[in-house]
Amino acid sequence: MGAAGKLQTQTEEFWRSEYQVSEADIDLVTSQILENGRPMKMGALASAVILRRYQREREAAALHAKSGDVYQPLGSYQVGQRLLFTEYEFTTGRVAALRPGHNPKYGAFNVIQVQFDADLPDTEFVCDFPYPHPLNRPAEELLGRSDDSLSETDLVSAYSGLVIPKIEAVLNGNSDFVIFDEMWFLRELLPDMHVGFLNLAEALIDQGGHPLAAREILADLDLQLTASPEAQLFTLNLALGRDERFVNVSLDENPVWFLRALMPAAVFIRPAVLEPVMRTTGGEYIGSTLLEQIEEIGDELDNVLNVRSQNGDVHIELPFPHLVSGTLPASKAVLDLFPATQAKYVPVTLLENRANTLVNAWLCPAEGYICGLSDWYKKTGICVGAVITLTKADAPLTLGLSVTPIRGKKPEWICSATVNEGVLVLRNQRTSLEVKADRNMVIDIPDPQVIIAQMVETEATGTPLSTIVYHVFEELAKQSSKGGLVHAKSVYSAVNLVRRCGAVPVFSELTRRACFDPVGGGDWALDPSLQKTTYQTPEEMFERPLSNRRDTVKDPVIQYGRN
Image (cartoon, rainbow, N blue to C red; front, side, top):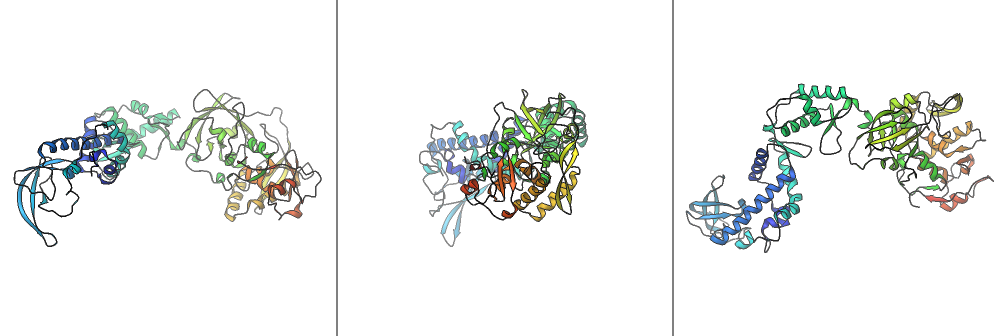
């Protein structure tokens, strides 16, 4: 319906509620693609539909100003009379026949048969019908008057968002059309892209060992097809996108293809040991001195604060789940080293400063890790607690990657983990480290698969975090060279041999449980007699009134992420 002073195509109500995609609209879309001979974005196709409707209505309004012959059910018409039909996209037609009609509810009326000027079948319409009907309104309302303050550009800008979903819904159900990466094309214009071409594309990427742009692949294939270059490129992308061997890793509208077989499994499926059972949500009570340790660890599950080093470097102390998965935590500080992206996975290059070699890896922002480092971890001798530094480089999507090797290494007493009868056991063993690591985080893992199996079992049984923290604290205290004192980072590292967890939930357990007392330097002491007692308020957590130790440190308690 037209609003007062406007054509209906100049109103939001028409495009939102009344407009339906017609066969003429689909024909127009088809002709647009045929005339251009190339795939087109829906925005351009919707623009053509909007402007064609608007122009027809505007012309019809001008025609009515001269003839006044707009079809309405209440009107009386004669054979040979020409009429304008607003409900048929302002198409005109000639009255070819007139006959009486009858309906018990309405009584007598007449029926006209109309031959349309457009390619439409002859159709009958009622006339001399003065009863309620949507078209029995003044012709000025049916046609409206053009609001010349609205340009065609304004119309397209204002109403494309309403029209595009309606056209897309129709095209998606029409087998004559195909879509790739928001570009629409006609199936009949697709050149033949048989499997031999795809096998060649696979070989090209495999030999290169890196992603290739679709245009590069097309140039090397030398298809010698008669279709336009745009049609060939679209068809190649469509075929590659339908073949599970290939993955589009582009960050923009120009497809770049790689082989799924050459990508780490963690790109597509999060490793089970990285499933975040305990993710920091903010508001957890912790001692304020623990903030520095949280930053040093750099666990992506603690992504509430966005703490950055002054020099732009990001240091990470690697926990077991990431080591065994060949992944690197991508905290907010790490993500800030890369351009912002909505992509699920991004190919990145890590330049190892020590050997001046490139490590091809994959950033998975939503998952919170960089994957593809398993070989580098093994080659470099990375261990649990290893200190890894990332530095922003000049090249896009490239970071410097560095660790500090230990020269003149010799065996030393290191906490080692195993499982006995379904329970994590920690013992000191003599071993040597190959790279610099935080000694409070280091735990030697002789058999990673045993630890992984234990993590799966713990997850299945739903063991509470408080139980896990207490158990690993006891195990660590037995091996402590500081009279049973245990560092908070050691607890975090050991907990992550049982259940994937951020540092903040672990530190919150230490802070609120009365059986643990901070004694300075990051160390904590255990009083088994208070195992089941919990401090309820920040003041109690600070004062620790039940402590029997004289060396207890009063650490101001904060809510993580809210101070």
